[in-house]
Structures are given as structure tokens and as C-alpha cells.
Figure (cartoon, rainbow, N blue to C red):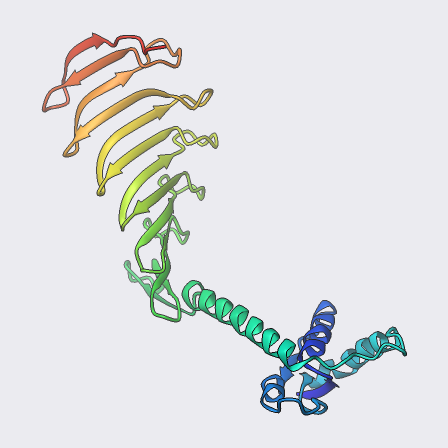
Length: 266
């Protein structure tokens, strides 16, 4: 690393670093915190920008061009101590927020499971720096393509998922979770881009399944379940957007009764 610029203060250092960044040059600020410790003393030599040796000539050219464009009669005034304090606090808060977000959201480690013994992991788990699961990927049919992606919240509980249930490379299923249990699932059963089958759950237990009309988004049929068994269904038999018929089912899912539903109140 080589010093490419000595700044008057931390503000100027950040400004020049951003200038170099725009040109694709990565620069690091050294001595920023030493300036705050020196109180009112000049910052000369304390705050400096360093770059890789290979980037030094190009970095100096960028800085010299910038310096040449600065008005000669408008030197950069030193930042008052109060302003430096506020700037330092602001930088600290922003930096802390960024580090916290990165700590809880960036995958820094991964692990895998080879379920079929072919030497390639079929399940992969990605973790944050805190060791919390961030995402998992699975290849259920061992064809080398991921067909389930599950994302987790900062507490390690599943938050959402996508599935490719016909293994064609397109994720036609999506799921949301509530307190770790599946809450809703939606499926695009015919691959037209519209999620036409929606199932709702309570505490992870299936309650209803809705068959949706792609042209209106309204249900053509709603099935009601208890302990996994179909109890009854409401059907829009004439496709006018209103559920008009109720079907009742027995313990073996046999149709036992059909009745007309009263028209909805207007």
C-alpha cells in the first residue's frame, strides 16, 4: 500500500476517496480516528489515503486533476471541533448500522449435505457471522439443479421459500411463513405466470385451498379441510365471480350433499 493523498481532515479524506471510487480505484483512510484524539491540533499527516501500489500513478493523476480544478482563493477551512464531533458520531452511527446489517444478513459461511453420495452437496446452508441460518438450497431429485430455496429471518426461522415441483428449472411455488410455520402457499400449476392455487394454513395446518380464475383473480372453488380431510367446498359453477354451490364430503372424500348458496348481500 502507498500513500496517495494527505487530507486536511476526515471530511476531505472521504470526499477524495469517493472521487477515486468513481474511477474504480479502491482507497483506504488511515488516521481518521487519530485526528479526533488530537483535539484542535492540525490534521496534516494524520489523515491520509492509501491505495495499492499498482493504483498509485492513476490515483495521483485523478487527485492532481481534482486539485487543479479547485479555486486558489478558497482554501478548505478546518472543521470546528463541534462539527468534527457531530461528523464522527454520524459516521459511527452509519458504520454501526451497516455493520449490524452485514452481520445479520450477509452469508459468511456455508455447509452442505451429500444425500446420494455422488460427491456433490444436494443441500447447502448459508449462515451469517452470528451463526444464524440465512438461506438453504436443496436439489431434491439429484439432477444438479436447485429446486427449493428457503430464506430465514434474523432469528433463524423460515421466512419464505420458492419451489420447483416439476423440476423444469422454473420456480412455480412460493411460500410464506409465520412464526416458523407455513402460512400460505401459492402455485402456478400451468406455467402461465399466474399463481392459480392458493392454500392457507393455521399454525402450519392446512385450512383452505382456493382455485383462482386467471382472468379475474377470484376463487372458482374453495375447499375446507380439517386434519387434512376435505370437509366441504364452495364452487362458482357458472364462472360469474360468485360462489353459488356448496358441496359436503364424507370421511372418504365422497360427495354427500350439494346445495345452492344464497346470493351475496348487495
